[in-house]
Amino acid sequence: MDTGPVILIGGPTASGKSRLAMRLAEEVGGVIVNADSMQVYADLAILTARPTPEDEARCRHRLFGFLDAATPCSAGLWHRRAHGICREISSSGRVPIIVGGTGLYLRTFREGLAPIPDIPGDVRDRIRQRLAREGPEALHADLGRIDPSLAAVLSPADSQRIARTHEVYEATGTRLSEWMTRSREGGWEGTLWQISLLPDRSLLFERTVARFDRMMAAGALEEAAAFAARRLDPSLPATRCVGLASLTAHLAGRLTLEEACDEAKRATRRYARRQFTWFRHQSGDASLFCGFGDDEGAGDIIARARCYLSASSTHGP
Image (cartoon, rainbow, N blue to C red; front, side):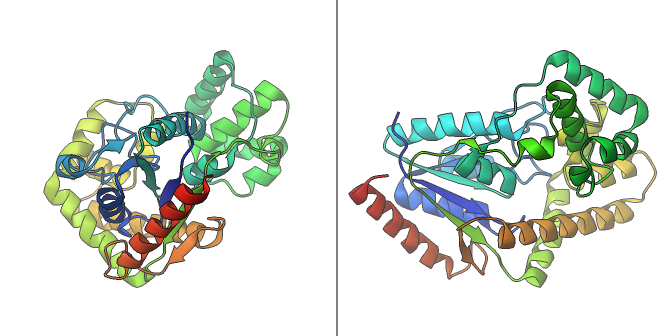
């Protein structure tokens, strides 16, 4: 299949990525492809700010809400699905527009993945059982022996990545940090252009607060209650959705609603701050736009995207 030009839009939460992507898709004949690790799940449409039915009616969206929360999504799974979908979109003569705040997903699309072998099911089950029995802190402490460089940067509460590090070491005998230094495989073979949105941080934080209030008005608490009723494994990635733990604590009687909302807003600001730092320093040769995706100045992004697509069609990949 043809691997035609692709546009990637990254940036922190509430930076206007989705609005920019929809405007661009309408103007250049694009299809929006999700690159947000939480928006892949069907269960949390409100808390993950997934596109609304009205958004989806405006232009085609792919890889949004395609997994049940009980099924973990890895960068590898997303990479395979995204590459296949983008090839389909390109072969139909349309433009894939990948949008999301998960920097790792955008990087793997561009550069591919480290050639880590598949983890046998019995190894994965054994590590997950140990995680449930001992807790992530105990497995994190053990990383000092297994993979000290990753232990230094992983949070003791990051159960998913801690378990992954143990699984890779047990299955291959090689540290995950060593696998990550090896040449990547499966990068996009066509041309691509990436724009990273980096608006004023104080205004960004104000937006995150206002958006959480809108989420609550739209039924975020009821969504959290339905999710909690499923009693899923707390190590699953979907359980790390920002704001979910705070609302669940309120539903369990540990926080008042006001306390839960305040805690969730603080967590969202911290998340936005981490994303902002990542896109400023680690988004490769992306073009940086110091504004929101729905600012008046975003018209310049549309114009640059048109120039990129025109040049790609003239000169080829």
